[in-house]
Every structure is written in structure tokens, then in C-alpha cells.
Length: 123
Image (cartoon, rainbow, N blue to C red; front, side):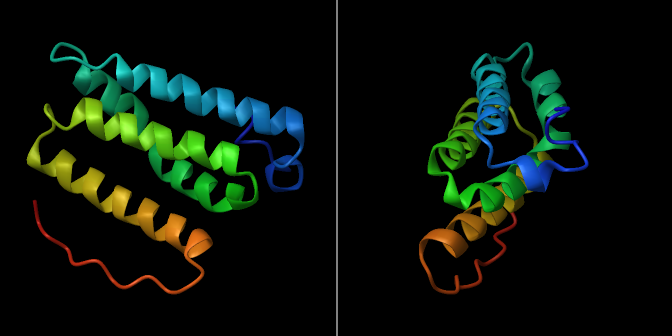
């Protein structure tokens, strides 16, 4: 996390060593959520939650580095796949809103047109 908190992160983020550190961090978080089960999901959810909005920002920032953007997408895919069975309604709603932001961010950089507003379907 220290890499992401560097004051000059935006200036150095596209340097290969920094990309490798960010990719490793995202892969570590993906590994954590893949270990989710009924006994530990809440701890893992609460551990990941403070960082997940930053990961959406990383997706936007690393549009020019698709391999790193894929790590962000893989993290969210694994997060939802491993946590959804255990989440409360509030946690599902939080995750839904965050994944909606993720999709909007991804489409902004990859579809080359404005995304249509996605309805809020209170889960």
C-alpha cells in the first residue's frame, strides 16, 4: 500500500517497477478474497473494503496499462464471486454500487462513448 500512498504516485505510476508493485498488491488482495469461506468472509470483506474505491481509481489511471487494469478487474471478479453468498443486504448494496462505478470507469476508457445511467435496483 505504501506505493499507492506515495506523494508522487501519479508521476511514477507508469514506471515498470511501480506497475509491478501495484500488480502484486492487487494479486495479493485477489488471493485473500479467494480464501473466503463461511468462517472468515466478514474479516476479509472488512479488510478489503477501505481499499476498493481506490482500486476503481486505479482502473481509471491504468487505462494505458491493460495488464494492470486486468488485475483490478480480476480482483473484483473474485471478490464478488467469493463473497456474494455471505453478504448482508447492506454489503450487497455497497458492492453493487462499487461494481457499477467499476463498470462505468471501464466503459469510459474502453467503449469510447458515454455510458448510459444504470438504474439503482435496491437489492
